[in-house]
Length: 404
Image (cartoon, rainbow, N blue to C red; front, side, top):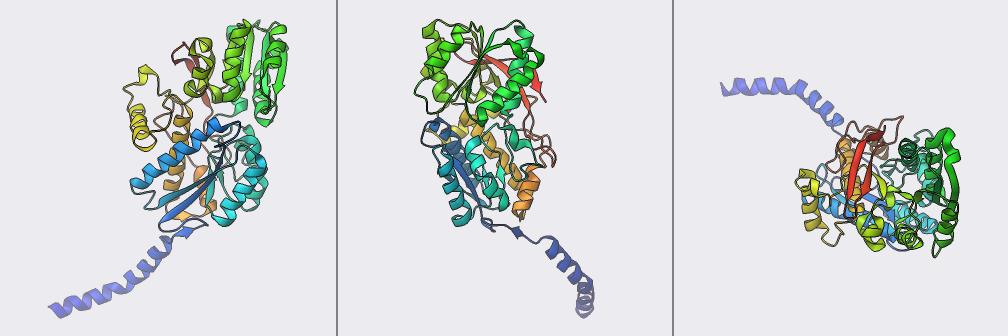
């Protein structure tokens, strides 16, 4: 009897051997630079110094989230090696840092790098080498075009889309407005301006002052005086955090009281409104697509409680009032989702393929109704926003979701 059983097993093993070879082939692991059985290297450039160093909070919270993931076993059994370099928001330093990340550190891809001019400085270099630039911390609409930039992708709503929403809200609430626009004199500011003008449509004539500024300017006093002198009663303020705090305080000192719309990137309570003076900021209008962790109405929200627990354990030095810590946390979660979808195919091509295949992906800190969707023909992960108003203590969301 034992002999008969042995003979049967030997006979059955012949076809199974072929099946085993097929299974092995199907399960073959594919690795690009920076990926192995144990590790995935991800690079980033960030402004930890310089005029826009407030945004360095993004890189710090992302690094903290990846530490959390690694403590929990990594992604598909692999730890994330996150290499984030300071470029001071200087395109020349961005080029230097990215070359190091690609040629020396041999990262698989870049994620969350900050800035429109900085990322533009390395776009051609990275595209020539087919290195993905994922979920860039810039709202430039150019990053949502897979035909023009097939190896790059933004994350949050584009500056163009946000600018358009402000214009639509102004037309709906103050159709006879006299509008002043202040914008940064670079691609970021021009994207906001173009979206704002597009949203006004044939009512673009409502703009009575259109003034730009340089990021190296010591103050924006002359620009503010020019807009006040134009008789503007609505102010679309496209400034970065440092200047936003100055502007909010200064217009109060000037006695100018327009309806004040502040772009989302400068709407942080901790980094902007507290330095500006909370009383001075009362009545500000902005947009939101991420939950405000400081909103008492969300105190029992499971995702908000989870975020607070994460911050306490992995990023205790992070400012709980700074909304960039919610944004960076959510970007890092999206990166992890792409890696999960990649499975054992960690080629650069598959990383980009999976980034363009996010379907109704929900994150706990996104506002209700806001989901992440990408496709090979649409590289804009988030295109929905809600309006919000600062009441002197906190931002209060109002109205329905706007945009797509």
